[in-house]
Image 1: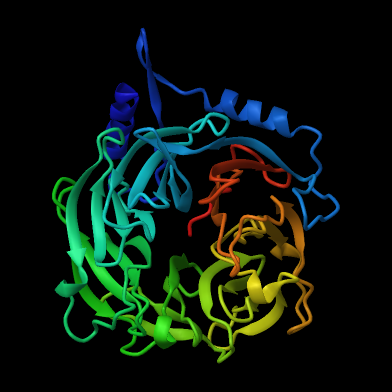
Image 2 (image 1 turned 60 degrees about the vertical axis):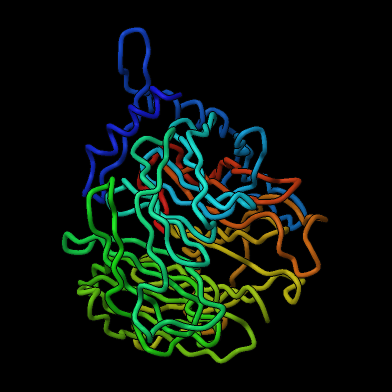
Length: 434
């Protein structure tokens, strides 16, 4: 395992600074380093998915026939197992936070049928984890700030830096609820930027990531707005290049305020672009955006309150149109959590209710009237969730046409590898970015 990890580390270094490059894992054998046979690996995955139809009758109580269990992995650290919460993927590696551990694990997903644990480390927090833009550092969110973990050798992880809220000016420091709840990272104009949702009604904080991988440093630069997001927001964000607007766009889930989009071509000077204020009884928790056909689609979910998923046509980003909504039948006590979009398919982690899949390619154009119904479902209605519904499936991502769902509590603990018959296994373009 150590030799494998070292080989991965060598390749990670080789792609430093190249945001779009994919990490190519290698293995050691008697003849030295031999590339993995990616075609053979995904041919096996395709073989397992043969005969599984893209469309199947929907079932809200169990896994639908268009999805298939392929494999699973529960992280074990010194003889104790831990459930997985947040997930991030790049190349053939994944990062996951470990529930109750106070840290993260690095996983090898080069063979989706045989996911492997490479290493784990306590990091003073487990709220979120993201790859740095150069893929050399894990950014781990906790109650006091962000920990910087060197992942070049996944079997021997080490902390190489720490940023604390105390290092930010006052203001914008918030109140007792402040934490590094969600993180996003992007390489913009050659600089590594980190975006932080501090849960304190002080906007999205924007920081620079600098220094060599063995001695990294984060520096607070600015915030999106001095007051933004209600008492608990912003909570989540995603940053992406928009080819139509010809700029980098930051989408912020603003708690009880709705959501806001910012132009961050110069992250040091974020400029409001659009969004929508929805003073509902629900808390806008998570946000994703994607170009689907000719439209810019934005999807948000609420974790408390009315627990509704909302789908917007934000082609005119200054005046988004609410196309449709969806709620679980027990919305008041069944919160949703993270979501991701790939090829127009929306994947929603819904705690004890499993993972729901929606086909946004079929969205209509009439405001409020578009039919938003799930087309696939993974897992079942669990008896393990607590009175408020906060158990099990926490996050879901897609890598190379294969779905990975993270659950943090029994009976579904671990990372589940799931085949979606509407995706092509091995297609590198079918990878989420949120």
